[in-house]
Every structure is written in structure tokens, then in C-alpha cells.
Image 1 (cartoon, rainbow, N blue to C red):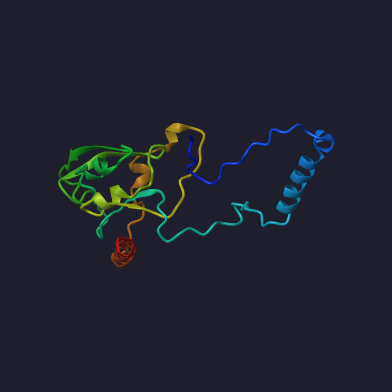
Image 2 (image 1 turned 90 degrees about the vertical axis):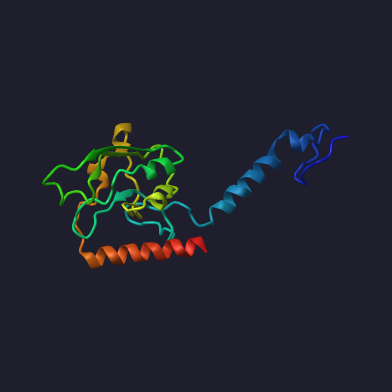
Length: 186
């Protein structure tokens, strides 16, 4: 004896069709009623360029490599973000800082090559949590669409924060970000 796991099973009607069923009229009327009912529902389509959909406060978008208050890159190429990434989307190569580059890089070791394959990235935020220097953050912007797969490999040219922010702006951003994560962890 076969037992049912759910109550969704329907018994199949195997009786022969009558004259009305042979015309398929009941099926057509039923389909038209469903279509007619959908005409009065709110359209789920959003006209994107003009209307933007509001995102959740915990939305995770495109990555950014932050700078410190002096404008130097925070990333020290420790590789913890790449190890924490379940999709293995992050690759990096470390290099030693040369004399005269003290203003460019925070520590003696820096990421000479830092790439994130956005096609592999699942936007989980584990790279952000693993970073001891708070160098990588997920912003609230959407990754742009493109037809070429090579344009989805973001290097340092797309990832490093181009604007050197003021110290109070950086602290305000980090503090707001920490508060969000503390709310999520509770």
C-alpha cells in the first residue's frame, strides 16, 4: 500500500468525456476567467531607470576596498577573505612595499593584484567578516550588466575606493556598518 506524504494529490478522473467536455468549452472559460482576474491585479513590473526598487537595509551589493584616514589602502593581502569565500571568487597576489610608497599602502605587505570574479560571487559577506583590517565592504550598489564575461572580473581599478574620504566620514560609515552587523547577529 502506498501512503501519501502530502494532501496535494488529486484523484485522476478517468471517465469518458461527455459532449460538453469534447468541445473544450469549460476549459477555455476557466482559462479566460483566470486571465480576466489577472487584469485587475497590480503589475509586478517596475520601470527600472525611472523607478528604483527600495532595497533592504541588509542588502549586499558590489564590493569596495576601503582606504584608511590617510588615503592608504587598508588591504594587507593576508588572504583571509579569499579563504573565507565559499565560491572561491577572490584571488590576490601579495607584494612588498617599496621605499617611497608609504602613503599608498598601509603596511609593508600589500595586494599587488586583487580580483573578484563577480560571476562566481554569491554576495554572502563572509569576505567582509573575515577581513581583520576592515578593508573590504559590500556596498549597496548593483553590479552593472554587460555582455562580456571578462568585464565581470573586478580588479583593483574597480574595487579600490577612488575618493579619499575625510576621517569623520570614514568613521561614520564604519560605525553605521558595525551597528547593522550587530543587529543581524542578535
